Image 1 (cartoon, rainbow, N blue to C red):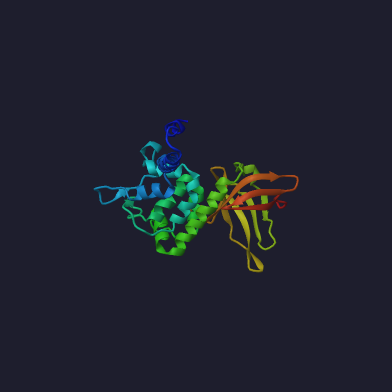
Image 2 (cartoon, one colour):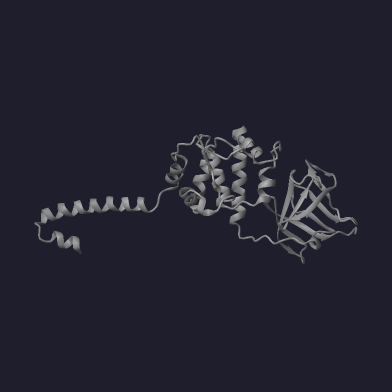
Length: 287
């Protein structure tokens, strides 16, 4: 109304000209206002990685190890908005170096390394998933996260593998399936047989008299199946973990997260590492 009142005393031609000017001014004001209200993921990320400092390197603070109030404002804005996911997944491929580092682990970090950290923080990756699935093909030399970063930096394929596993974790995180904690009674003397037309995998779980938890394994190998060595199992943070040596918990493991057990149909609905699967679930008849 105020604009109309401002123009009503002018001749028609001048009114039209002034009105066009006002519309142009309003357009640019709106664009400026929007850009001030919300910066894009790219703007926030670039502001973060290009942060100026007199120091040779900046120490990266992540949400999994530091209180929220100590995080950089742009870092926090990025990980709080899941709408930035696709941008970060693309950025995770970047090998452009930055001034950031994690002392004794990776220095300098690439833009892709920072994007990986942001995605892990954004989707609160569990320790179990990180220590097993993310480390699946990584040989432990230093027995620290340095092995993880060395692996990422070794080749483009390694980096793509890690990005794929992060993507799969995001799918699990977004799933409506709630993982329920296991109890020993649900595992001991039970048999899990993978329901699949192409693969064979069977686990039979036991607990010895001296309380050693072991599992007999059968795996597929091309068109035949082989009996695997006796392995070990335990419950960690409510998840069933199967591993190769009772004294080497950080070796390659299989993690089975329980969604639910249909006792009538004898089916276990679960996640095996990062994939949703079904097992035929029965009481072991040999015990």
